[in-house]
Amino acid sequence: MNIKIKRLDHHGIVAGVIDDLQIVSLLDQYLPQDDKQEITPGEAVKGMIMNGLGFANRPLSLSPQFFDNLPLEHLFREGVEASHFNRHKLGRTLDQCFDFGCENLFSMVAHQACELENVDLTFNSLDTTSHSLTGEYAYDEDGCDENVIKITHGHSKAHRPDLKQVVQEIIVSQDGGVPLACKNWDGNSADTAVFKERSKALVSEFKKSKAPRYLVADCKLYHSKNAEFLAQLLFITLIPSTILLEKELISRALESAKWTSIDDNYKYRVYHVEHMDIDQRWIVMYSAAANSRAEKSVARQVERAHKQLEKELFHIQAQRFACENDARRALLKIDKKLKYHRLTNIECTAHKVYEGKGRPKKDAKVKSLEWQITAASEDKAEAIKYAIEQKSCFVLATNIDEKELSAEKILAHYKAQSAVERGFRFLKDPLFFVSSLFIKKPSRIDALLMIMTLSLLVYSIAQRRMRSNMAKIQASIPNQINKPTETPTLRWVFQCFEGINLIQEGADYHYQKIYLDGFNELRAKIINLIGGHARHLYKIEKVT
Image (cartoon, rainbow, N blue to C red; front, top):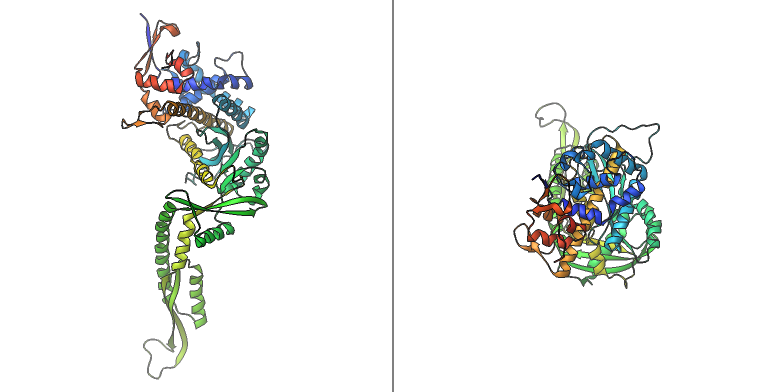
């Protein structure tokens, strides 16, 4: 008997969710087809997503090697082979995605996925990150397409200013961290400019929505150049500490001490203000945890400032000045820079300078006077206290009516901004699309970043679906230390599926003649929780 054995592992979950979201058929509807093609552009994108979520430590150029031991007829369709996912086909597919428009293509897929999965679009978190790149990228300076991103040096959020980069912007729903939109920008793009363009685009989109939609972002959203569009949106954001009114309201709230407690950590005070011609609620939040961190950080700053001041005072007392005024002016320059200290015990001493060299005689004439200045220092207790208090508080701003959203919920949804940050951590995982960004054409890098975000979309949908079903039936699965958890990550689930083989009888593929080896009760439970086409791929006919 002819038997074939292939590795299925967790790839059935990924392929099943992609099929549930109908990504392949949607992409094939808009991307150009070729009569001689072995796989469609949609299937090529599905292959790239599976490669990325395979965490196989292989770049895209080695995709045929990645697919070589997978049951492609089971995961795709009959006739699909590993060699079809070669670098030429994947490169052409990236070019087709770029030509159509990566932002528009992703938005269509995300919109369809959210409708199929009933994702709540009420709260939308916006943020940016930077992807560091190595290598040289050639541009046609004369006829370069203005839509091609420029890979260049800029403010590196990855703390690698030596490397060129590209900036990526993502909006995610706070319902499961599902990405709703993504766009790639030049490596030197500023967050304020990115947020302004996105706010402008969201005005019309939010107005079309029947249900209310709110934009949540960090302090870069709140800028005078963006006020025109913020006034037309419902937003939650953090007020930058550079705005003077922010510090004034924090001081006023601390002086009044009329706080409303949320829990042991947070308490708040609400002020109604009109700023940038927008009627808003500014909520001064005090955090006990932030206060504890502030005390430690300010103490370190005070210590560093004191050591620096001691050095400067040592050097200035060693100098000699032509007059007392010059000495005091030199000390005044130091005093103006002081934040946490003040100068005390300031003394000016006149030193006589005699004619001639060596030790002066009793009757030697005084040629001139030189002045020396000395001083000590002490801490400014009020300045240190003020700094700690300012760091213990932050101000959230919103133009959402208090009847719709209380201050407690404003804080909760601002903290849920971490959903987009988790997405960025996922995209930057060293095992995720490792080395795939070593591509010479910036247009293909643009398209590949969109494919990476599509992978995040598939991952977040699968995880959201699994956790939602677990909550409905109060189910749990063992975590890494064999204790039950109700909120497992899909990454851990993928690891739980290692070692599942698909056994095929005969040379030709027939669904009825395949069997799974290593598929146990726990894995069947997880597949039932994820549901959809994954049940078919793991040969679960009935839901238990």
